[in-house]
Image (tube, rainbow, N blue to C red):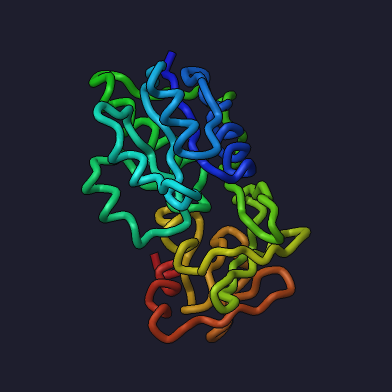
Amino acid sequence: MITYIIIDDEPLAHDVIESFCELLPHLSLEKHCYNAMEAMQYLNHNSVDFMFLDINMPKLTGFDFLRTLTNPPKVIVTTAYKEFALEGYDLHVSDYLLKPFSFDRLVKAINKAISEVHKNSTITVSSDAIPATSRLFLKGDKKYHQIHLDDILYIEAYGNYSKVYMKEDMIVSHEKISSFDELFTSKNFLRVHKSFIVAIDKIKLIEGNRIHIEDFKIPIGQTYKSLVSKLYSQ
């Protein structure tokens, strides 16, 4: 059994991580820690294989906490602040998950962390242990909404936020559209405009400089035309 703890001052963040990890039968959650001091006390008397560590916590930040440990477990940083990634790698963290992250991305981070502990180990998850569609949690209205990627029609930039349009709903996410662009790399999504990402399998038709998805018309940016044309010129 591979053991881990979660260190984050937001209870909702614990719920998101735990719900994903419950799909992986090899993992065992040993402790919920809501600040660095609580985690420090726990690790003084216990050991785990890895930990999920938030950066922005009161009194003692995640990285300052990490510097206090002489023999820390492997670390997967979970944060909304990508500007601290370089500092994290200087501290030899195993991976850096930028919120919101998908289940697939979390599994990759876990595999990377435990492979450093057990050189020949990887997480293997049977197909019936994972939902038929990948999913993620989006923060909006001070809540975390569980979203199935198959339900997303398109995403629109909304200042420093994003509007995520789905079959039955729309959520204003606290993430910039650039975060979704990075998150959806190599998945069923395509950036077609500086302000729009579309689900490829939801496209009804492409007409001129517009993409039709259900009753919505999404513009195609000039610099993205060549990417869109690859959809129908293969």
